[in-house]
Amino acid sequence: MKILVDGGHRLSGRVRVDGAKNAVLPILAASLLAEEPVTLRGVPALDDVLTIGGVLQGIGLDLEIDPGGNLRINPGTSRLQPTAPDDLVRRMRASFLILGPLLARLGEVRIALPGGCAIGSRPIDLHLKGLEALGAKLEHQHGCIRMQARGLVGTRIYLDFPSVGATENILMAAVLASGTTFIENAAEEPEVVDLANFLVALGARVHGAGSKVIRVDGVRRLKGTSYTVIPDRIEAGTFLIAGAITGGDVWVTNALPEHLKPTMAKLREAGCEVWEEEEGGVRVRAKGRPRSLDIKTLPYPGFPTDMQAQMMALCTLAEGTSIITETVFENRFMHVDELKRMGAQIQIQGHSAVVRGVPALYSASVTATDLRAGAALVLAGLAAEGRTEVGGLHHLDRGYVDLEGKLRALGAHIQRREEWHSPSAVPDLVGSPQ
Ligand code: UD1
Image 1: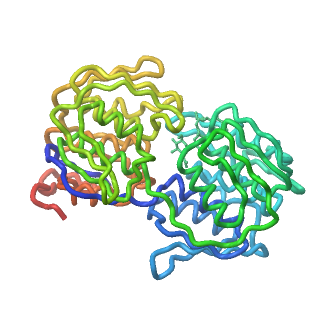
Image 2: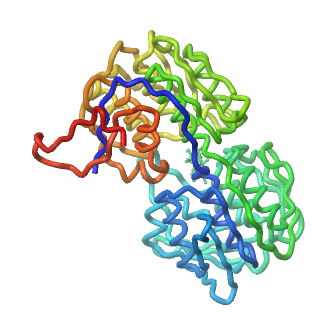
Image 3: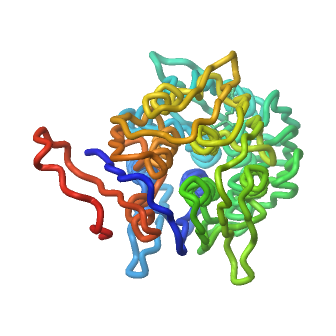
């Protein structure tokens, strides 16, 4: 499968973002903690959601889509078991989010160690240290880890780095621990706040989520709830850049401006008009060629690493030279070589990319190396001259629901097609908006 984009079409109109992938994954893991049914609304139909759903089913939860399209999770302690299915855990790092809740609920968990991935080695030391501080015992067993606890006990945990996943794992374990836990230097991402709000809806006592210190007063058991997941700020940011890079006018509905501040600020700096619509959502209107930007990725509320590749796509076409510095992941410049195939002028210097803006990109056959790299290539294709082919779509499908359908509705000439060998079989995308 490939995505084919005929570039050069100005995008305009409204597009609605789905629920946030990075919120729904920990929330699904946290539903292991509930002793009564949970109903989740706004769950995006993504491959990563299916993967964690498979992990939860493997552990013993029943998952079903109700007639309203909501996800219903029916827990039952009698059937829960502590070993996560290896193949699914290896497929997606975020499966590791079951560690904290399973440990809290069953007192035991056995899970394969996550491997590295394209964007860096991504250790899990902070997750493990935090859970050990709550009283869990850790054993390494042939590429797997086993953690056991005869009752977790609240304590003070300082994270060397405000890791999103470690904050979430520790938070999920702490809600059923006895006594009070403080997570210091905690991640402040909106997805951490959404997880905390979900836990509170289950009956947990969590304070301070969204600040550097989270306080958790342990409770004995958690009930069920109905909960709506927050909108995806990274999907929203991607559509705002789609508007900016095509000289367009795009209104992203269901987006929360308070979660999009760094992206909105950079788009303004690039010369776009960006504003919060009275009826909700965020709108971008591009004015001429973008201006160059200096960007440094940082933990929230800094500029998100998950928007770095997409913003780089915009900078390739800017007037002037942009400097993009990646501080969160060690190797998150895999998209650079692919953007260069399209005529971008980029040099890597240590943790920074120096992007000399060019007046135009040209089409090429490129491959997504990770999820957001894939989004960046599609964005570059929207602006490039001619037809760009983007492969590696399994990455893209982990994090975007029907990206090409939503872009088509904004006026993009984009299709997903099986790969073919004969050029005569290539359809004309122009005038085929469906
Ligand atoms: C989450 C997001 C991902 C986003 C990232 C940073 C999910 C499912 N994924 O990933 O989209 O890019 O936050 O915003 O929510 N680290 C350690 N030791 C640890 C844990 C992390 O050194 O135990 C390091 C990592 O290698 C990385 C940095 O901390 O360099 C940030 O990682 P972290 O915040 O944990 O990201 P994830 O939770 O994996």
